[in-house]
Image 1 (cartoon, chains in turn orange, purple):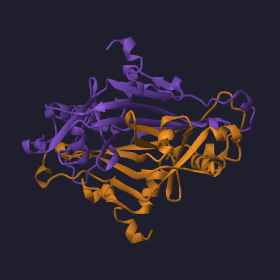
Image 2: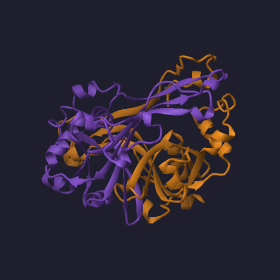
Image 3: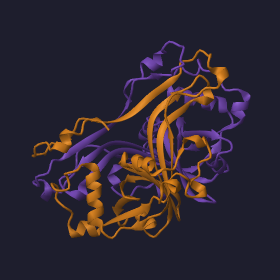
Image 4: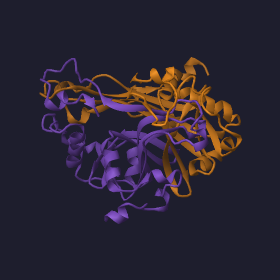
Amino acid sequence: MNDTAAALPSSDRTRIRRVAENARYDRATLHAIIDAAYLCHVAFADDQGTHNIPTACWRTGEHLYIHGSNGGRMIKWLGKGTPACVTITHLDGLVLARSAFNHSMNYRAAMVYGRFEPVADKHAALAALMDHIAIGRQAEIRAGNDKEFAATTVLRISLDEAACKVRSGPPVDDAEDLQHPAWAGVLPIVQVRGTPEADPLNTEATPGYVAAWSGMA
Amino acid sequence: MNDTAAALPSSDRTRIRRVAENARYDRATLHAIIDAAYLCHVAFADDQGTHNIPTACWRTGEHLYIHGSNGGRMIKWLGKGTPACVTITHLDGLVLARSAFNHSMNYRAAMVYGRFEPVADKHAALAALMDHIAIGRQAEIRAGNDKEFAATTVLRISLDEAACKVRSGPPVDDAEDLQHPAWAGVLPIVQVRGTPEADPLNTEATPGYVAAWSGMA
């Protein structure tokens, strides 16, 4: 995939039409939005209708990964190639304009269309999930055993058909509204990392990746 | 809807099967999760497949509301009664267990199934959205004119068929893993309100609801 192709919508349904100036089709934006997330929302349809399931996600290369128990509805339907749409949205603020209809939100959203496929190397994939949580943790934990791995399915979806939409910055009012006497600006919303809470039964010293957790995400 | 009925799943597809002890079917939990959100993810299918669109949301009574331009794909399809699934998820932390497969996340999620319906009184509905952003703002802004209201559709979906899933607290390891020497606990994730950023062209004094914004959301 070359840079020119990467900066264009990959399909008709990923071509953003509403407020098209906020569309982003480059890989760097897509990767950054996914990598900043711990969970995504997965939409798919089964014999009971359309579902929208929040689930943990992580990225390796040009695929987004999820996992779950073999018996779960989502895993069963996605595992057989049911079409899906995966969306990740980071809300960055409320945008207060002078006029009602120019209010907006600042956000970073990514949407991926496609079909999931089972991942054969579950050990490598779930190690990548652990690395997404904290580099160094995989070596410390009690690793999964054969029974645990057998009960779990890992799925991935290609990032080939994807689009992002990003809004940032101050409100955009119409010229004739600029003198209207209402405060204009952004009320920021920020996802931050709180102080780690050790389990009451924890017996171990605080590892570096836990000590380093707090602060801005 | 009486309290007893409210505490049970309202349909087969809202009966939570995976980690069922985290299921919540009461109205207070559902309302609190929606009211803490500024956006939801709406899943629906059209002639191009299944979509999953992030959009602003708010609640009045037993309905969740969204809005958008008449011409948008989501509004067009949902406005004619296309089945939908709306999900809101607040991520509260990463749960680090001693064993790989007992890692989890703390979260509050709500899922609503149903069909949206057009809202006739758009003025009242959009005033409620403004109140959700900041009480007091509606009276200050340049109100929408007839053309703006005419170009906008407001939709609502009943909360009748809904379910929540909530996890909180420390990791739950198997007894035989409690002595494994890995740090156990929660890495909290918190959504906070940042310092308001006035528009460079703002001419107004800071209203109370802006001054009061910063701090924990």
